[in-house]
Image (spheres, rainbow, N blue to C red):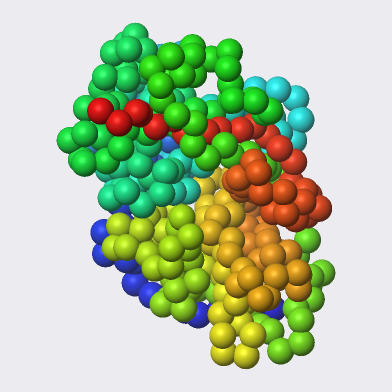
Length: 350
């Protein structure tokens, strides 16, 4: 079992909930989240509004349901919570979810410091820390033609001194060559960066810590926020150290856990688990080179899986570089299968 460090107070600068309501957990009700809101009707009965939360203010919640938009007065809310996206095909939740819906789920596990919606697209900025927090997520309809959308993307990132980057999800394998946005980006010379696979599993199918013993002398510590030893082992683009923007992004999910494996007093492996309704995510998996091939990666996955089960997350996802054969073998052996792929397109130098 892991040693547990008591959670400290919430980190300053953590993104606040866009809305809250009686019966809702903190962070559940954010614009763009799928929610169910039980509310009182004038005759005293109750009804559920199920759909996407499209707006919230001090007095009302606006939910886009299948029958149209429902405006609920906060005073009439009995209970509210975020729920996973609906399935688009038959099968267990981790395979039945659609590509665009899973991308939106994952975006809630690694929230940027700034987000601007362009129709269905999300323009994200986070001080340059990771592509996930500093790219336009091209899912859904941007609400204008593609050349116009790309012009807005370029302007958004130019205003912030960041390279224009578009994240393009698509079926695996390949690079989504049949997508209109991919064809346009390629024609304009936007280069491919970081082809990545998204892998998913049923959380209950993943091994727990009791099934993955540690090497002699090793132990595990978990905490709700990353301590300095965890941060020292995290390497973004191969460089040690996490900038202030990164520290805020790492604690931006509804809930997260930071796992460290220690050999004696040295931190030799780390991972981050994160949570959204129905889903857990695994990110930031790192093992010191000298300690690889000791089963530490499998133990990190098992620790996050136990944590996810304790929170009721039915499904778990992770992302892995398409050319990282070693990690893909580890995750495949643990029970993860490929759901879809994505890659970034970066604008050519101006």
